[in-house]
Amino acid sequence: MYYNIIPLILILAGAIVIIRIVIKKFPAVVNLDVAALPQERERAVKQRIINTRFKRSLSRWFSWLRRIALPAGEQVKTWITILWQKLLTARDNLSRTAALRSGGAPDAIEALLAQAEEAKAKEDFETAEKCYIHVISLESKSAVAFKLLGQLYFEQGKLIEARETLEHVLKLTREDADVYAQLAEVAAGERQPDKAKTYYQQSLKFNNENARTLFRLAELNNETGGYPEALKNMKAALKIEPKNPRYLDGLFNVSILNKDKSEALDAYKALKEINPENAKLSEMKKQIDEL
Image (cartoon, rainbow, N blue to C red; front, side, top):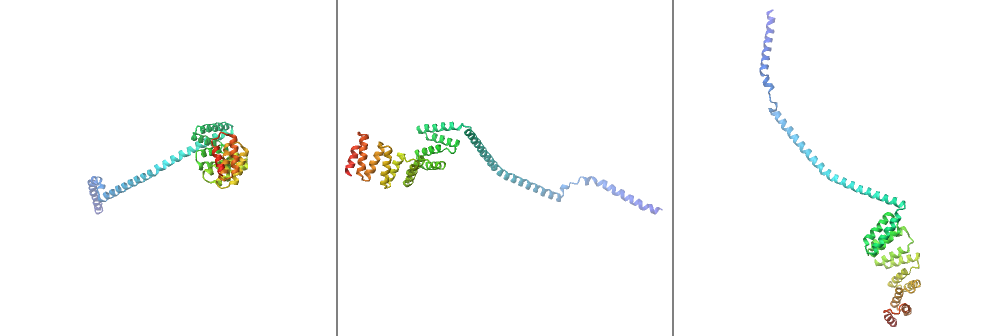
């Protein structure tokens, strides 16, 4: 019986010894600094390096995004500004169209045309141009405004702008003798006599009673060696305005250049009858006598 108790006593004694050892060493185990272990220190260093690299990467990405976002923002701002201006322009155009339909624009157009003519008289060509362009903004198919604008450009010596503007008038109305005559003047200014003659001839198809057009065509024909046509057109101009000193003088000059004594004498007599005090008469008579 006692043999059975002895092993139990030994087991209990061993357990008590182990418990006492654990209790004695527990504070040391609890206070163990894991971070002080070499493996833990290495892991902490790696984690710190990783965190630092991650922060640097984030900083670079944010910097890149900022460089892209700022110009993009400016572009968006510019685009919005342009769009806003277009909307304002569209609003103004709609307002002008509404005014035109309501019958308010004709009065405005007449006032602008009058203002343009007044500005031209004062040689304020910039204001006149703005007025004509304003009229065109109110009525985009105003042949009158385009025609006057083309004439204004011609008077300023802006031949290219004059030609382009007058050619646009022909898209609005083909049967305008004045526009063809003005285009002829432009072509003559651009040293294109053949083109100018074609325009003058086209003008005469719509109005063959324009003495000035006939006279200018006669001058061009004479300059290019077409004396018969020049004489014909010059006489046609004088038939419309028989006492026009300029046309008579033109007939005299054409006759002298082509050594036509008879026609020169007729022109001389007509001029003498109109203005016997003309100081040029004695010189003209001398030229006739020398033929």
